[in-house]
Image (cartoon, rainbow, N blue to C red; front, side):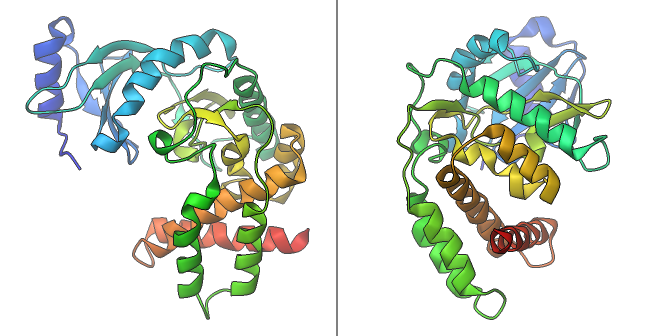
Length: 292
């Protein structure tokens, strides 16, 4: 990981974009894991990958977000300038337009079903964009939109370590069901990281979607994980019904959610917010599966 500080970002702006050096610069409250984000003045953000594995996202967003913007009804990041690597910070970075809104929580949305409708509407718009020249899923976006089988070994290993805490048979059934089919339709655009940290709310409604660094084209099932990561039983049904995919796609989506939940639970210290989140989502997935 690269250590990124306000002083470093200030020096980058002063050397490459001196016209903005007078603007206030401060970290945003929730910066994410893959990038560090800073507020620049009142209308822009500075976004810097914290590791080289995330650096390809800068060029992707620079190329594709201007294409997406007029085709989507909700605000998304708009690139303003692209920063160049330096000896001090050896990766590309970007400056985007600020999108006003708060990270989604259960407290700041007025209705879960309404939020499920808003999110489904956005994702259907994204999937409708011509994907024929898009970037295939793969290493560049951690296989979002590709085959979930690349995470088979990790997932089975964690299931094995959870003996005594969970019904291994149920977890294995859910996992194997997610691997049993392949996406056979035309590839579509997917966001790649539909999670609470990337969804913005204003006045109780979804008002923006950010962080398209793991976008690509392929199987859209990985974009459905909010069904288990956030929604309750009723809003999950609303969301999945509106997304209108076949049962196999839902099984693959549940597998993506399970993989994320298990690694978050197992790879973080027990009792931490991350580990507790992973356990809660794993419990939700098992309960939902047994209801089917």
